[in-house]
Length: 143
Image 1 (cartoon, rainbow, N blue to C red):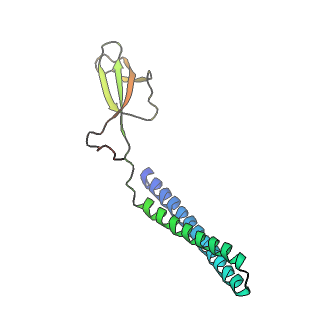
Image 2 (image 1 turned 120 degrees about the vertical axis):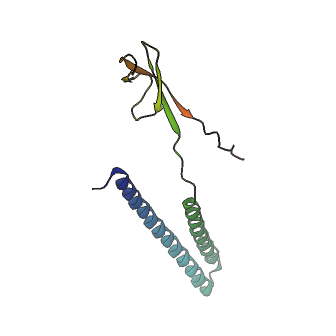
Image 3 (image 1 turned 90 degrees about the vertical axis):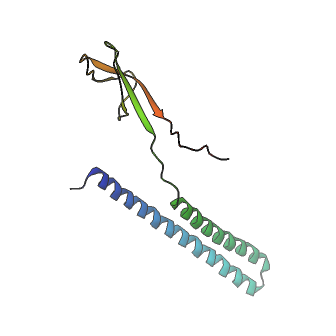
């Protein structure tokens, strides 16, 4: 049986391959239309209709430029660094004895929620704060 992480990775691969296929098809369509515009410009040039030539050359050049720009953006996006999930912590405190417990954030945590049992007095603890740990090694972004 597949684990949850394996299922997520296979669905992520499928979505990436679908995006890649759509990307390739759209670039091919843009290049085809650009080539068609340039061939129409050549045809109008041979017929002596210079007023139409300028428009079709412009459409063809814009189509080729957009195709190349799209490919460049897609390649650059593929080399980006993965986004690191922030370290979020949950602090729970016992209202009776004052015991504090800090643990990793779990889905469904919210402030004033009744949390796990206090290890000292066995009373339920209450979540008092949820916060993100700042990364000390992170360099300030350059403008």
